[in-house]
Every structure is written in structure tokens, then in C-alpha cells.
Amino acid sequence: MGKTMTKQPAYEEALALATALPHEQLAQLVVVLSELLQKRYGPWTALQSVDEVRDYLEWTRFRDSH
Image (cartoon, rainbow, N blue to C red):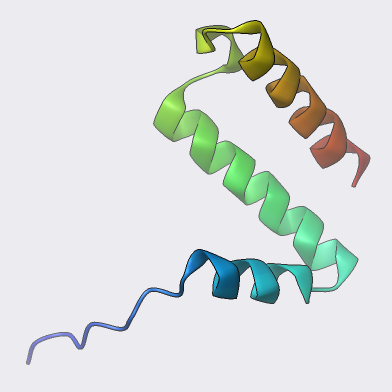
């Protein structure tokens, strides 16, 4: 009774599926992914370079605007 392993979609496939979502669902996905990244990699204060901080701030602005 083993589980059947399903093939993980490639990045391009996942991106295509995500961009096809209605805006509301895409915004929900952004929030969930943001929380996942924060849990996995820590808060923005752990970022090491100015570029990383800038990218993080741009990301949160985008996320919060949707």
C-alpha cells in the first residue's frame, strides 16, 4: 500500500499554472508562499546585502498591494 509518487512540476509549469489563476487566488498564493519563505529562511532582517533587502521590500509591497 505504498504511495504513488507524482512528478513534481517543473518551475516553468508551476509558473504557468500560477499566472493562469484569477487575481484573488494568485494573491492568496503569494501570501502563502511569502509565509513559507519566511518560515524556511527567516525574516527580512536576516538578509545579508542591500540588494536582498531591496528585493524583499519590493516583494512585500507587491504582495501587500494585491
